[in-house]
Length: 278
Length: 272
Image (cartoon, rainbow over all chains, first blue to last red; front, side):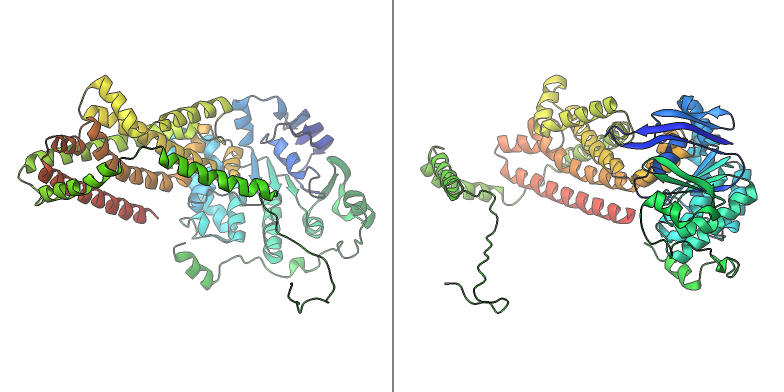
């Protein structure tokens, strides 16, 4: 369970990114955070694992006050929070398998890391995840040879390798085309539900957020201006979050969800391209 | 005066002129005149003895004649000097490579706290301040003539060069990868071997090989001030007017440097 209370962040530049933000995630649900650029979405996500140091307020995950931890204990609690990024942030020159196994770095020592000697169970779990996200056979491919959608599948798998109690997801689809975006969101939401892991997902695509979220939090100027089920997001709510605009084309319930089966298997052509040196 | 343009109506009086770095024409042209005057004055006051310059040409011709044909008869001395130069270069490159890793990491502002960064950068700047020859003279004064002074000189130069390149390479890494690995709960040492090392290794090796090539060239130079190697043999032959032997040494150095560059290019191509 995640509890955030009175969270504020003021950057050294004077920017007031978050103002007294409080909310609780009690059950394994997908919570998307929407809001205009600069509303504080990224800051909020990064305060939770303290990649950004909060200025005030407390963050509690399963009874541990994250804001009070020293560096060593912070590393321990970071192991339990998987993070997924807009730019995937894979280590480009490492293979897909090494990128997945980096999710276990918090559990192995330095020399095992150096020799890539991860426990056999970790490797087996990685193979299972690769199959699950449709990347079987990619384990020895270098990350810089993958397409955007493939990279994000690896990014999701790396986060899940941590067996996280919470997923922090920062604009997972903002660099992807619309079709790949839906596939990625579908995988992400399915896996979060399967494993009972709550997920906080920053998004700026309102339609996509609505179709995949259990709950939506609206941020504006560093403050929460909406918090409720996805179905409660109306034109008035969007005006409250983003300002005046014609929202009639934005709000839509996506009907084709059950239509296409999720087949991320690469086409023959993809494989040929991958095999040529980059 | 102005030609009619087909793009616009006649009588459109709007004009535009380019923006000069120095707008005032008096200041602008005045600076050009001053610069030209200084050039004339400085050449005039250099006291170049043109008669002595004239004498130099026959001397050069004489020297070249005495160089021919090159004398390879003292090949054992030549071989010993060359080998010493190569050994100095290889040893210095290797030690420099090793020392550059901690210095380079400490010099990367995205990895270490500010004071560590400033200390490492100060070290790099200080060791790059003086030319190899000056450092070599310094070490010859301390440790005496011979290859030790040369090796130490080249170690200082290699360490600062490779660590500067490494630090800049690490600083240019995309911050997201570091952020992602930190977010998994990895320690600093794990961050280094799992994220920084794979990303920075190819260029680090390339720079080190380039430095080996540079060290072979520099090892021939530091010998001239007595720091060992083939350069020391060269300096001695000049001072004894053994110009034919000097030419033999010069030809050896040329082929050595040529081979070094060829090798360095080959290895760096393999690394790509």
